Amino acid sequence: DAGVIQSPRHEVTEMGQEVTLRCKPISGHDYLFWYRQTMMRGLELLIYFNNNVPIDDSGMPEDRFSAKMPNASFSTLKIQPSEPRDSAVYFCASSIARPFGETQYFGPGTRLLVL
Amino acid sequence: AQKITQTQPGMFVQEKEAVTLDCTYDTSDQSYGLFWYKQPSSGEMIFLIYQGSYDEQNATEGRYSLNFQKARKSANLVISASQLGDSAMYFCAMREGQGGSSNTGKLIFGQGTTLQVKP
Image 1 (cartoon, rainbow over the protein chains, first blue to last red):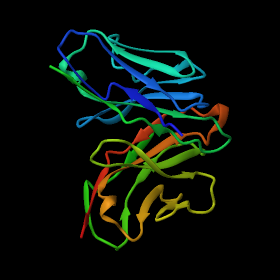
Image 2: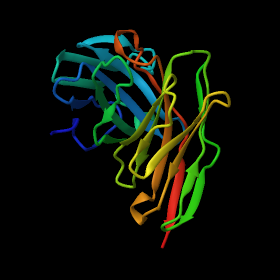
Image 3: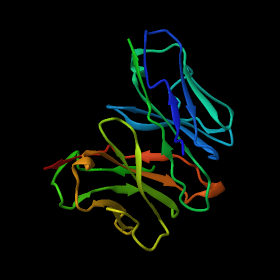
Image 4: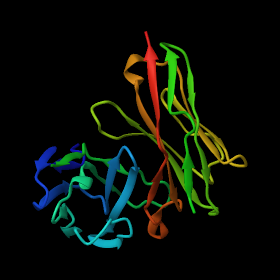
């Protein structure tokens, strides 16, 4: 079975450019999460969706960040304009609602470097 | 506020021996879930094991077991018969709610423990 798919795996861009990260969740999963991992802050949740609807975006750092989920099989995280402090690994994860203990399965991550 | 604490930045273990990675948590919720993930040097996050706050028995998955002590708010990961491939960063995480429609879905992660297995 295919896991969570993320693209690109690596992205190098210059400050001020727009960056779009893409995610395809596991088929049938109804939750999708975007996380960011940095040395300073560790792993932190940016936003998550349930049935394509954003539920909690309190972790989105600022207006430069936006996320969409136009359908059950695709989500994007966009940074516009990008800044060097946005350099991090961005993970997408998905899960399926169960009465107890659904597990979030992570994609391989996108390593972003903003110069 | 919820919090996950992993007090061991780095650990060493001899191949074939068992090792315990510590995790303590803080929450006022009665219903919550605890997870362990492994992150090898390649960077992916691999789910290892889950424990629900109402589960009476400690979770086990192959060589992984979770030593859940609810009163102490600890959820230590035990890896038995360590292998060289176990060398990685290990993260403890907590989620509010047991799951289902009332689940917030949000995972809070600890800072991680780096485990190195010596041959």
